[in-house]
Image (cartoon, one colour):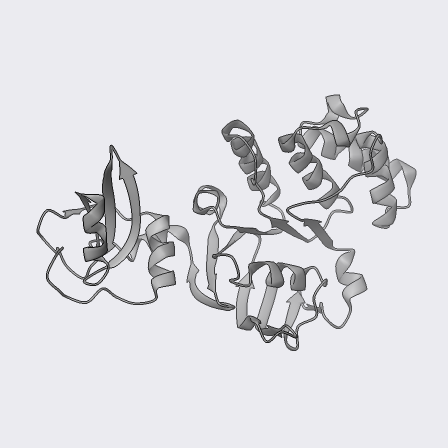
Length: 296
């Protein structure tokens, strides 16, 4: 169990990156959603002991992470959004080097781990190729392989599907779901679709605070009967922003498809729709209920 209590971090320029974040995370995939500047990266870096918070605590299975970061790092796998590789070094050789740095001293143990991880990530046939020649999807899978060296208890993944095509994204989702069956995986993303497909729980952060937390299906059910859609001219969208909480606006065939949050059917051409996780996300960021008012 990963327990985060009242984590606080303020940068020298006065920006409050974390304003008392508390979360309890068990085995499986846990998603962190939020806009840029919400505090996701600072929270992830704090979990990886790369940032030192001023207040609060982090414990993993009862172990005080902040008091003993070295022990924690041996139980940690970390895949940042961007990571460099040594040019010209084959994947298997690079994994062997990283395993040594992770404290896997036995050659036989390293060989067994590396072979298993190369098979798991579908990279075994590319084990002799330089990682610098890998495609974006292959690099992300290699990143997971290196993160799993040493059999970590906690794996942190930042923007896991950034830059991947749809096929690689699905493959990466399956890989994350598989490893999440036996360890804690925390992933940070701005893509609601990633969280909806693979995470059993999620938290939405805004301005350094948790504004909503729970299971995706339960959070979606909480908006049942309160999400409505209407197609209208683009010039009329602004008139909806006062009366309602506008959740999203998409252009379809040169017209705006507007989704709003309202306590009851607003009428005037609005149709009830089934809520989606994206609606939950935008409603949480709006942090208010739409008041009763004349429809646009």
